[in-house]
Length: 387
Ligand code: FEO
Image (cartoon, rainbow, N blue to C red; front, side):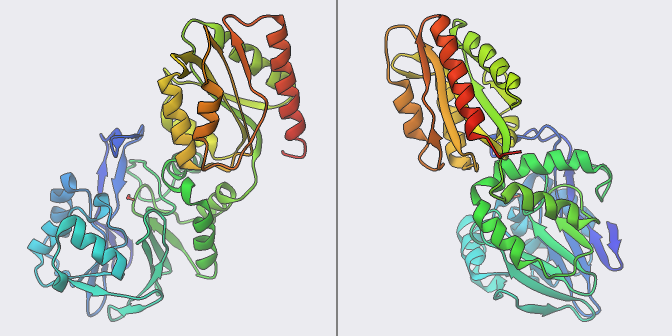
């Protein structure tokens, strides 16, 4: 137990070793499942739980403190998965959540109906000398998510929202640049598809007086504006003068084009972020998508379509729905194919203007490099006015 403010404790678990989330998302810095204990003069509340493999740590941390309420912000198992075990240990405790989260917890974890108290948006729960206000915040990260504001201590508990996958021994942020990277990666992988609702949720909490933001992953923020500003920026419509190039090359033709094109963009003062998909960490690519104005996909033709690794990357771009404005495709083929149609056809969720692709047969020739210059010029002109 680590005290955050008087009678408010951190009782969660740091997962130093975890390297993959949802069998999909790389966690280069591990993560934490933050759980908080609030001891009021009359009642005690636990905020969320931990991923089931860490539940023994949570039980140890709680010792034999009596728990009256378990606030469930979110039904995903990294926060709710230890609820059955906690209810076993504390049979009189009630789960406090919203009706949607209750239904999901009943479906996902088979928790019986009589274990729940449901609350409305902005409803208050008194613990005696401490008061909790529940704030519905859908889509950060599932439709049922909510936040809790501890009024007397001005602490906003935000679950996934504003968090980061970062295992750290310090409770609070000590190195903002390191946490910025981890929080941006987390935003890119988890939150970016919900950019519009994130803006609404930021608006909803803007009048709260907040001293501490306490997310359920990563360090706590005692300078809340640091992460709120970052989220305002990432979720805004503003893009940067950048081109992200996820690519792959089989026999070197596409690589020659990529190398030339990267130089052509740099010469025009555009920031370029190429990602060789045989080597890249997919989280790095997701981070680069947060701000970029343009994506140019580079692929050879395999059978009649793009390389499967490129299909995977384009699929991710489509589901992560970045605010990208322009897209194009460059690459090569041996005898034919429909790569351009297939890549463009996958980008159904992103509102991009497709710029004329450059697809060549075999190794690029002089006129193909001129076509790449033409594409670089077009991107330069489209980026005019973007910083
Ligand atoms: Fe950390 Fe959406 O769970």
